Amino acid sequence: MTDLNKLGLADARDALRKGETTSKALTEACLTAIEGAGALNAFVHHTPEIALKQAEAADTRIKAGNAPAMCGLPIGIKDLFCTKGVPSQAGSRILEGFLPEYESTVSQNLFDAGAVMLGKLNMDEFAMGSSNETSVYGNAVNPWRRSDDATALTPGGSSGGSAAAVAADLCLAATGTDTGGSIRQPAAFTGTVGIKPTYGRCSRWGVVAFASSLDQAGPMTKSVRDAAIMLEAMCSYDEKDSTSADLAVPNFEAALTGDVRGKKIGIPKEYRMEGTPQEIEALWQDGIAMMKDAGAEIVDISLPHTKYALPAYYVIAPAEASSNLARYDGVRFGHRAKLEQGDGITELYEKTRAEGFGPEVQRRVMVGTYVLSAGFYDAYYNRARKVRTLIKKDFEDVFAQGIDSILTPATPSAAFGLGEMADADPVQMYLNDVFTVTVNLAGLPGIAVPAGTDHQGLPLGLQLIGRPWEEADLLSSAYALEQRAGFVAKPDKWW
Image 1 (tube, rainbow, N blue to C red):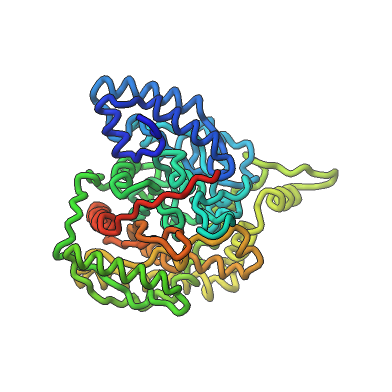
Image 2 (cartoon, rainbow, N blue to C red):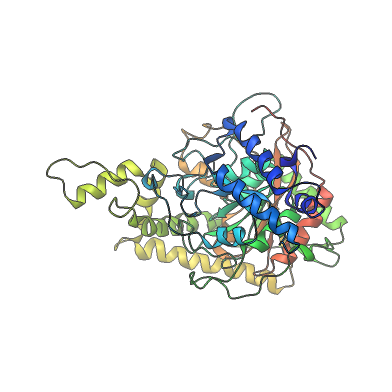
């Protein structure tokens, strides 16, 4: 078999079971692809020795005939997941040199299932960003380019390295995390599939925290079937995570019937926002037509508090970030600033954080500290929490009316050029999350599926939002959408 790195998880799994290839051959193909893709800056910590060792163990396990679905499949791990003995920096200088003595629950679940780790993937610093331009490693680059120019484009953020690596066939799939759209937005920008499961479905233990009540891990893959396979391996109940749900994990792949006949798909009027490009609106209408053609019932719905979602998110997330990032003080681990004679503990904190945190992280920590301060706690943070409750209730009311899933655009545009928003108001960048943050605030599952291209040949994605804990049903609906959209485009190799 040639071009083994271009296979998806399902096809590679089937080839392994039939003896048509080996995990070692798959892994070597991916390692070769990674070596030739330095221009994308997707992989930032390479672990070829670990990968080949895991691949050999997987081949032995497959020969024994009792290997799980992920066994032998080479993947990338976002740098936010702690991996034992391997640099885990969360894209930040402040964690330079940090080698965890433990494994995150999600990566451990994947390794227990026989997955092969090719290396760690680029990301926005502490997952704070929508373009992968805040990373200490430099920008990750989208393998897609506009048809009429060679401008380097963003792969989205914060899971930009994961999205770029999957789209460029450097790995078969990758882990991502989603706090306000950081799986779904990069997936839409790169023509890949990304699912954020219900909050509590995947353990957060060993994942460097950004905003603890919003963060959730999920897979980034080449197809909906692959997403179902990998999500099942990632999920588990974990007593080390107090927010982990003690629920059985279904066989998500077995649920992929693609039968949406009789399903009610909600179309929220509030997502028709002023200034939305015509191509996004047209894609949405195409998606509605596809689901209707598949037998679903299309229902207009209202989520009245949607307009308050972004402001609420950008109060709650920075507030939790300022609390979580207070542990990075230069004392226990990571970067420590050099002190001058006479400097004390306060100077150590100040200098270490000034050197270790990038501008976007500093901005969000400052905002978060401000909204949690004594004089503004009720005016900002408590009010945002109340708005969050209203947003959650909007979804509960809609689902109580019998709606099975909700169809929306995934992003307000196709991928933009790296640096194009550098001089803009930071709020312009935050608007990239306009269709995704509500899902995190409500703790719901959401999936981005590639559904078309814009006039410059760049991929565009649609988002399906599901009921809590019903990822299996959501994946099946996404499978129906994927089949009808028939998106098979790949970026032309220029790197």
